[in-house]
Length: 93
Image (cartoon, rainbow, N blue to C red):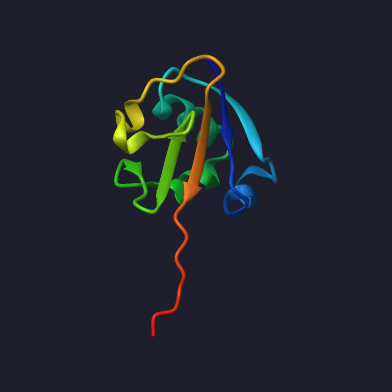
């Protein structure tokens, strides 16, 4: 399967500035494995404890994978996976 992974600005230093990377895989896990094989530094930023880090959200064609089958969510040919690290902020006062 040909899948596109969109890389947010905060992770582009790990992908040599690439905004989108074409990867292969039939699940989100396989697609991200292909991505992190090519860009190993990215793995340290998106994974924790064998899965996605708590602060990293992944969407397949607009659907949050956590509401689907997580990393085992199937992707179809032409799907887009979006990585979106949660942003902290706001006024704590």
